[in-house]
Image 1 (cartoon, rainbow, N blue to C red):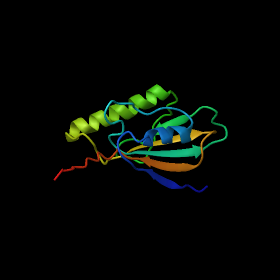
Image 2: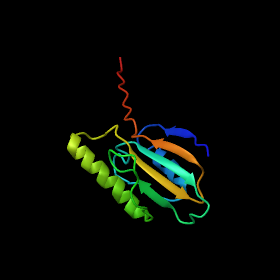
Image 3: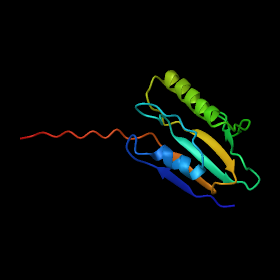
Image 4: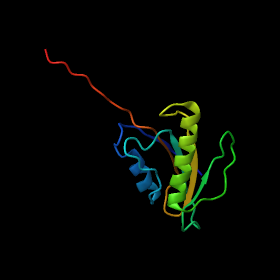
Length: 129
């Protein structure tokens, strides 16, 4: 089985997370007012013929092991949000480079790994002379 790795890069609110959801086939990500993705999400999509419903597992923090399957989209969003909030509170930052790793097995997704990154806040200063 071969895998491809792709990165979703862009400015804030460019739709990077929505692209991942479209490729996976269902909505799961946190929707915040200012910035949704506050730490990278490594999404390992695995085409699994018998998985008629998505089975998602999160990699345990500081481990290579994956936890129990999570099937509810709202529960997936809650896990992402709680892990992000706990890390940012601990590091006292608004964005972190430490990724959350999620493996999604589903009959309707390709074998593909995509890394969803926090958006860049691009501000350009213009001076009139």
